[in-house]
Length: 247
Image (cartoon, rainbow, N blue to C red; front, side):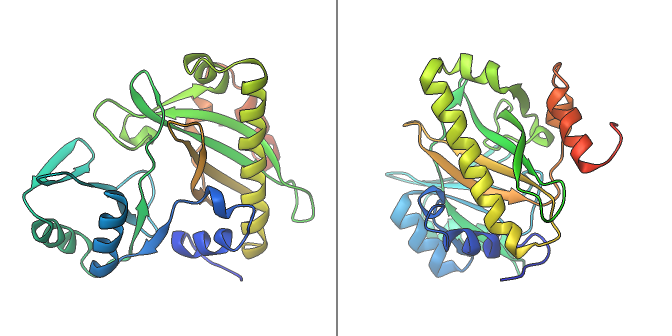
């Protein structure tokens, strides 16, 4: 299945067809009010975001509580007394734009803030194998649910993140190997749909039980997080394989 652009749902469907990746993918649906209600009732906590969005913009976290409903977007926290009010709000947000609905994953935290991993996977040519050239952790900014640096997230060297998580030795080795394995499998799978693609930014979250979840793959990943680290070795390798001068 050949794809174009950054259609997140199409990329999800391609990855979902791979039985090795399916267990890592949170259930994702295209927006409709009926689907929204079904997903909210099923999971009690969901994420609604643009099908082709980036930089953590317009990402809505919706929770079903005992007596009300809560919507979180950026630093705003909106409380509604019933589901009809929530639907009315979200209907105005979505309009005629394309959004997707995803089960929310209860992410593990670093310094009491949510975090995820950004993995850069590259191939030198279309015929060369995919390889992981960089991994960082992205810790969310204060008051934000998303981890993007554009929303005041902070990039952490993987070793620093593991130390803060108190993960070391064989447990650390096993986790890093699983992250790499999943990122490469996802890139190989989507690489068939984007045959000219030579780089992916893979966003993987870790839940509070230590399980990994693929959130999405980015075809044009920003590299500012890698560049912000004191250790520039990953950034230099990424840029070398991209075939561009460091900048």
